[in-house]
Amino acid sequence: MPRFERITVNPAQMGGVPCIRGLRIPVATIVGLVAERVREEEILADYPDLVPEDIDEALAYAAEAVRERELPLQAG
Image (spheres, rainbow, N blue to C red):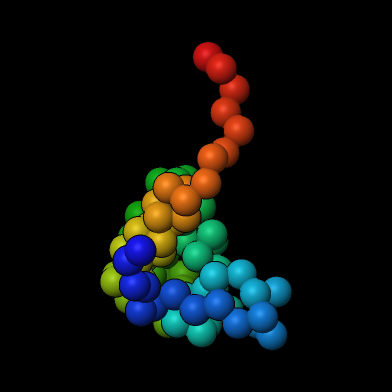
């Protein structure tokens, strides 16, 4: 399992969801913005506490999380 240095989980903050560096910015928020094709520059402008490496690690964390469990998919 990779070690994620920029992802924190604190049960007393944001309901314990994975966040970026102890900030109140959930990994899911950043991954969702990337999925919506929001440009990195826009994300960084909207969240000035972030740096590009935070976005990269959020994506890597999400990829690892998906590898760890099955998600229901509709047969196509």
